[in-house]
Image (tube, rainbow, N blue to C red; front, side, top):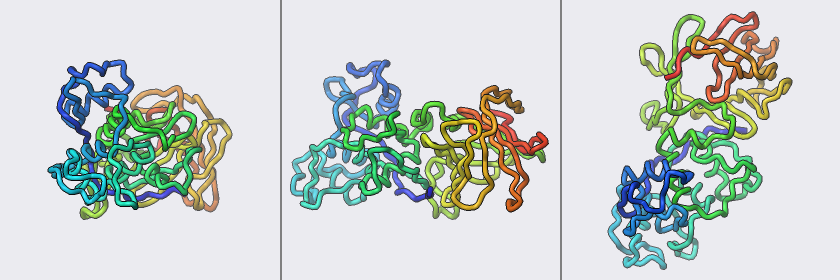
Length: 363
């Protein structure tokens, strides 16, 4: 059962000692995370070393993570007693460690140590970033190497919901694998910038491009504009949201917020602190049936694949047709809707083909 959950509020940036991207002798455009590292360097979030390197493949230690979080948050990094037996005032990161711990971003160990030189694993990273980035949504965690008994289980759900990670193609997360500076840069960049969130999607994703704006028109001629943006709070500044798809009407008035979510099993839409609905199940195969939620709902069936569907925006030739069954216990009329990779839903019609809503513009 999916849950829309509240994460802790923090926006993170990454930093070390200043060096422009162009001067990083060990970073080239062929690196898999070149753009993410450059993005952080240009903002002086990530900083290189005195020898003009960024050492992208070096692992990140717990002390370095505290410094990164602390510099981003504007914490006082003045060296001082940290309260941990293995981090004295002589330790460069002591001030940041002390303040980050006080703020709840990082924790020490039961024996009173911090272990500043231990490397951060992917499981550690999930725990830290779940405290760092805002998301009202925790994704289902179905990785084969992650169990509900693990401390990182729920945090992984948060960073999945925030489009910070997608896991590995073999459906593992590898929680004990050490995180490199390049990988940490990628995770942080995804937490801050929608264009990098686009990289945290499965192959053949049906999620929309988070850098674009989508306009839909209903049968009555009204339109709604959908834009992915950071919303600190909604409803009297009481509900932190983070990055969500925001819907506005033709007058610019707010309608609603929602989150697209996708695993290797399904694609769906979630409303913060409310319902979640499955829109499509994977693998996409004709004849496959599903229900949109765990409560009563009419049966949905994938009735065609590779369909041509015309919208006011463009004609798609690779749509998936989903038919909602005619159920006498369901108050709505039966419909068909069409999904396209990279666009999500593009058109909904009633059973005689009359358009109920459709995509009219992408910009």
